[in-house]
Amino acid sequence: MRTWLKPVLAAAVLGLSPARAAEQTLRVIAHADLKVLDTTANTTYITNRYGYLVYDNLFGLDSKLVPQPQMVERWTVSDDRLTWTFTLRPGQTFHDGAPVTGADCIASLKRWMARDAMGQILAARVASFESVSASTFKMVLTEPYALVLETFGRWGVPPFMMPEKVASQPMNEQVTSSIGSGPFIMKRDEWRPGSKVVFVRNPAYVPRQEPPDYMAGGKVAKLDRVEWHYITDANTALSALMTGEMDYYELPPLDFVALMKDNPDLVVRVIDKLGVQQFMRPNSLYPPFDNFKARQALLYLASQEEYNQATVGNPDLYMKFCGALFLCGSDNETDAGSVKAPDLAKAKALLAEAGYKGEKIVVLQPTDRAPYNAVTMVAVEKLRAIGVNVDLQPADWSTISIRRARKDPPDKGGWNIVVTGHGGPDAANPISNYWVGSNCEKANIGWACDPVLQDLIAGWAREPDRAKRRALIPALQERAFVSVPYAPTGQFFQPIAYRKTVTGVLEAGMPVYWNIEKK
Figure (cartoon, rainbow, N blue to C red):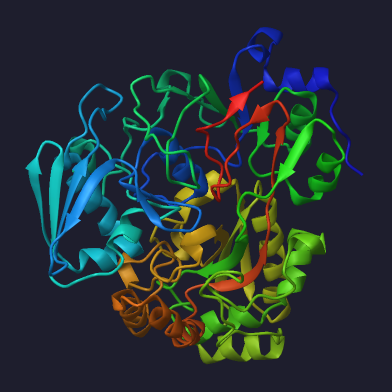
């Protein structure tokens, strides 16, 4: 049984005052501490959500997952489908007052395409970029590519448009600037790492005129301030939401859901209809997981229901089994190649075949992300049961998000296994699913490496016919379960919660803060 903090104690812990509570400010319980501002170097949810606040995008997906223009006013494609010309909407400026230009967009696209799996596939077909005028730029391809707009408008980790001087800095230097052209401005003077991040409405932002629709349409900032509060104690966070000290809970623990639903002042709602897929990500750079067989062993450790019971508990919020890498419920659902039942003896044998002889396996444990932590502890128990020498290293998620990007050997500050998750349209698409991308040193953290799988992904992306693309999915997934870029542990649905004084919350697949008002 949990002990709930009294309102006075919650206010004291959070450092809030009655005067502050009266302001028209949305106070959000953030799921993690914002430490990294470089949206091209870090794919964590907290950095991406920061990106959606301060930056804008060329295109955005609507609720039917069709890319719609966002920063772009119009575009043309040559008859041979090789030359794409984009003209920006007038009146768009960065937070420092500088106009957004085609040169800014080119530099931002180049930086993003160098890191992102979906961007890399497009980049391999780009012959050149050219700045035609201040507001127009051109992209010339070496061959027709059917998914240009889907790439520019990808959902979770899109190419955010930065000033040219920022986007052009060396790739080995992280972006520390927060100057974008989005609907909100980060208040650097009020940033308190480990505690609070503040965003204020951008008075110069010119939204589109269309109504908001998923990630498309008008991004109208109706709030004066959005405050992210990082509250490590879940009981304190829940009490703050219950009493009105906080307005919005991004990622409430799933065992709070029933209690929140019983509160007449709260709305509990799933805004990501595709759900969340959690998984183990092995580091493919170092033994034993540089060997396919060791990665395959992770598939046999436990049933998805065991992982989901530890993570979610409530069977109404999870799937007993999902064999689809690209999410059950998506257009690309298939169970081809999937492992349907655990087999510890097989897992042990596969590790032995991979050459494992008892070396320490560094597993990162996220102490402040309950779903990831639950999966981690189940996996660690099973690994130890088959004789793996587990070195469990606990840390908060923000620290892990920095460490997991390091390519150091596991015994020198690196790692072997980390649990994470994703969801929404990005996870359901072979080229936007940056965890299945297996482009070796250019792949996402963990650096999955399988040229055969990468060729299958590229072939899927080359096919212009949607039905024919769908027919390629089973063979692609079967190969993925051979090289195992990641081992799925289950799919569930994560609600958000907010007070009924908050209106205009969009079903955008993730928390976004435009269109929201407070009564």
